[in-house]
Image (cartoon, rainbow, N blue to C red; front, side, top):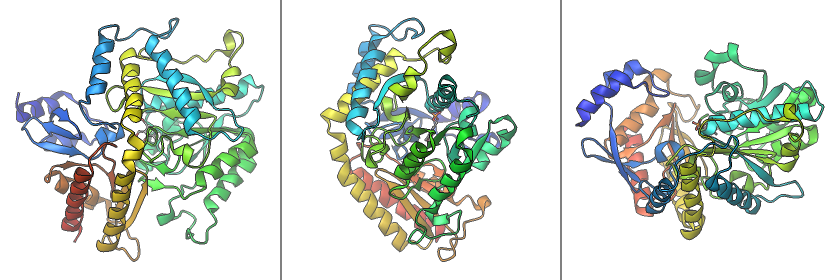
Length: 455
Ligand SMILES: Cc1ncc(COP(=O)(O)O)c(C=O)c1O
């Protein structure tokens, strides 16, 4: 079937995520039929560089032989059997590998390492599991009243209702307010548009003091603090200043609340280290991982907890963690994840990434300098955002109906690069294994599009 025919059928029967379908059906969808390396191909035969790693999941490119082979080999054994009442070879092997990796990647500073892996299917479910675990933990400890959570403004932790409760992006989340549980919101470390009206050079991270004020007053109501370490991604690629993560972790310890690190976007090399928490020597009580875990092949997520959390659930039936999904611990997905962990070792991925992080960092500096409508650039390792503004001096944003971010990504799409904006922030997150040449070419084209569209 050709692109046009498939596109018509898509409009007839597919409801797309995060998409105003009235606009979608007025356009011509790009229908993807193939992928190879860092490129995806549409039904017209056009190739695009996958500049957002198929929504931040792809690490090693498409049709990576080692991952393909691992899935095929597993398919010859079994695709899936339940973890309710049974154990699975692949989910056991993956849990052991993940615990080892976390132990190696996070400096524990006397705090217990993460040891217990709870499987689910996607980032949102990993977060639901973490929130429910934290809530129930306190009940088992005989502590009542901790019925709320603390999260950041502009946070994004997924789209299920628990994850939405701890979210902080009005356009996505406010519709559902009547359905959500209680949360306290603390300022995002968004230095370019500081909620407190301060400047990074002199603020002494006042956003952390705001969090402390909330905890001082409400720790007895707060089960856990949840944040996206180092980078609030979907909130507009908001890179936290050095020390913010450590500061939040310290406050959790001081006020006796659980610290949940949502590393769904940042985990598996995205920020340059294996996990973002490693950069600030933070070991959370609970960590959520998904996206890159299978290299972008299959849905899988884990919520990893300490022995302290896990042990609180040991006891009679009432102490059970009553949560699970049909596809929990799926063998094909776990086999893909094991292949991904092998590849990190055999390809020395994190060391190979360093020069590319440097190329990206240099380009970000350059685009900020040369372009009159780039207000701010932000990055953490190999995830970056470029914020477009109408007026660089006053930081005035473009009116939303100008859709400037969209106009830029549509322009660069014509040049064979697939990107997606978050409002007027252009997200740059190619697969970790992109070649230096392809990375430079992508940035060059994006630069041309930004200048072309904004000036
Ligand atoms: C930090 C973070 N948490 C959770 C999620 C939700 O993951 P999923 O889309 O797999 O449900 C995302 C997705 O972008 C994310 O970036």
